[in-house]
Image (cartoon, rainbow, N blue to C red; front, side):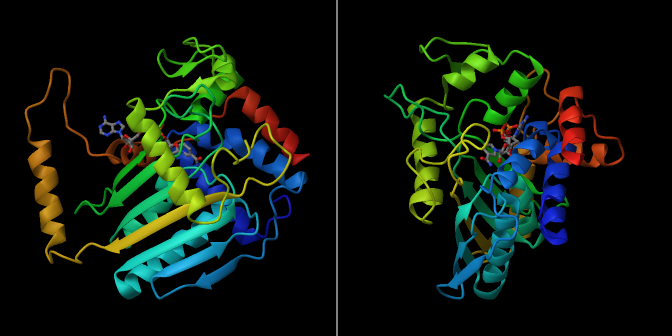
Amino acid sequence: MHGLNYNHASISADALINAELVEAPSHGLSRLKMYCDRIKKKLINPKPKIKFKKISNSITHIDANNSIGFVAANIGIKQAIKNAKKTGIGLVGIKNSGHYGLSSYYAEQAVKNNLIVFCFTNAPPAIAPHGSKKRLFGTNPICFGTPSSTNVPFILDTSVSMINRGKIRVAAKIGKKIPKGVALDKNGKPTVDAKKALAGVQLPIGGFRGSGLAWMVDILSGVMTGGNHGGKVKDPFDDFSGPQNIGHLFITMKTNLFAKDYRSRIKKNIKIIKKLPKINGVKEILFPGQSKFARYKKNLKKDIYIPKTIKLEIEKLLN
Ligand SMILES: NC(=O)c1ccc[n+]([C@@H]2O[C@H](COP(=O)([O-])OP(=O)(O)OC[C@H]3O[C@@H](n4cnc5c(N)ncnc54)[C@H](O)[C@@H]3O)[C@@H](O)[C@H]2O)c1
């Protein structure tokens, strides 16, 4: 448990295994060594004294005291859920946290409580702001969730880069190529070499629009919460010069704040879209999160495949 108490270790393990089950291995066990390395180097605090500042019944500010990101975010979303249940809307800002894995893991908790949710986190420099050749913004995911009227949560959870950095890291680790059009090498040339991409810049989705979204997330997660921002979030794999001080921002809302029949309205909304004529080769129009949920259900009954390099890393951690 590397000094984490049982509760914090189980929250972290659950989040990592969840990433494997939804087939996002870039945010799963391939990161375990990194988290343990950062604990060993005292950059993640295994025994954090997490402080809560109640600003109102809706708003809470959390200082995570460099806890592992999973724990800070898990505590944060639970507080945001509590606040929204009490007042209709919850806003939680978290500073002094670390990499928290998949945003969907936290959004799902709010949706299970019948709430609409936004989750934001900033991340280490990966994307060059539009017009610059230096990487500064993280892949800064934007996550929106809502109950869908079925047991499948509607969760849009997307990096603002063409692909998430974790996928490039895993490709570099296991010697795989990355897709075309997602990254440039350090000389600004397109590359499919994962190592060259890590040394260069990642491309945002939609050009200047994606760059703008990455900037927005940096402001909400970093500037607003008191976390690091403006390219100061340290890379968890390569930069051991200090804690990451990542910021997260969670917004939770009751679904029936305006129209009282949200459940039937969202059901109708999804039905209209699903009934649209489909392009060739598409069997079903999916809503965000639908395929992730199906993967989770399917994989719950199976063993998790761990690549050899990652298995070796984990075995060494146990010694
Ligand atoms: N903590 C961090 O610093 C950090 C940084 C970046 C990304 N991440 C996480 O990485 C994960 C993966 O991000 P990503 O950008 O690779 O996601 P992705 O590209 O796999 O999916 C993006 C979104 O598109 C939806 N989607 C995919 N296929 C679809 C289809 N056919 N029809 C409709 N919707 C579809 C998915 O449900 C998802 O909501 C996310 O969970 C994100 O939170 C974390």
